[in-house]
Image 1 (tube, rainbow, N blue to C red):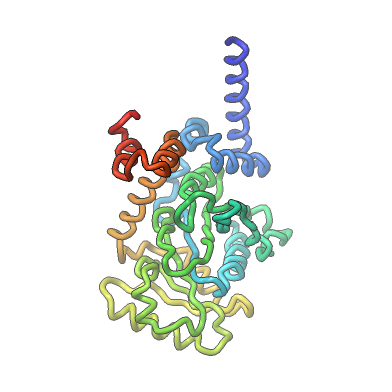
Image 2 (cartoon, rainbow, N blue to C red; image 1 turned 135 degrees about the horizontal axis):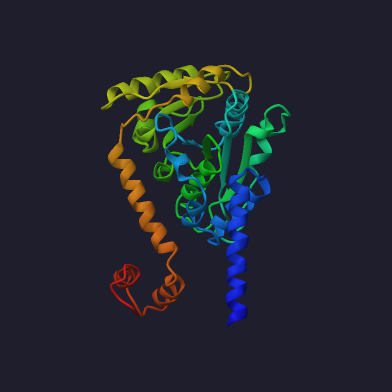
Length: 317
C-alpha cells in the first residue's frame, strides 16, 4: 500500500510540474496538458489550483474565444490563416483549436486542418501562434465540450485570444454557441437566398458574417441578400463583411472588426439553451456508469427514462 501511495504522489507531482511548465510557456508541456485534458487525465480544477486564475478576468472588455464556422469549401482555413498572421503580427498571442470530425466507424480523424495554416511558418510571428488539432471523438456535436476547458487553460497559459475552427458541417453547427464568446459565420458566393440562410439556425446566433471569396461572381450579391434579410429580422443586424483570403482583399478591415467584435445579443436565449444542453451531454459522457447503462439499454433490461434516472443519481443500480 505504501508503494502505491508513493506512486500516486509521484504521478500527482509530475502532473503538477507539467502544468507549471505549460503555464510558463513550454510548448511541449502545453501540448501534453491539452492531451491530458482531452483524455481526462488532467482536470481544469487541477490547473486552476496552480495557475493565476485572475488571468481569466484580466480583460472583460474583449472576447477571449471566437468560433469561426461555416459550410465546407467557403475558405475558413485560408481566412483563419490570414487572421492569425495579422493578429500575431500586431503582437497578440493567438491559439487556434482546429476541430476535425472523427470517423463514426473507426474513431480516427485526419487532423489535417493545420496543413493549410502557413502563418505559423513565418519566423517573425511564429512564437505568437499556437495550433492544435482536436478530434470530435464521442461528441454528438461538431465541437467537443472539452474545448471549453482547453480554452480556459490556454488563457491561463498566457494566450490572449483563442480561435476555434469548427468541422464545417454548415448551418446546423449551433453547438459552438456553448463554447465561444463570439461566433463568426463564413459564407461563400452563390450560397443561396439570404432569407433562407437566415432561417438556417446558426446565422441567427452570428455576431458577424463574412462572405469570403469576394473575387468570385455572386459574392457581393450574396452579401447584399444577407444584409437585407438581417434587417427584416428582430434586433441589431451583425456586420456583414466581404473578404478574399486568396487576394488579401478586405482582410485588414475584417481583422480590425473581428478583434473588437461585441456580443450582438441577438439570441441570448438560444445560446444559453446550447450551453445547458452541452453541460447535460457532458455530464452523461463523463459518467462512470455510461458503458454499463449502454449495455443495459442494448439488452432491453432498462428503458431510456430509467437510464436517465440512473445518470441523474435517482437510482444506484
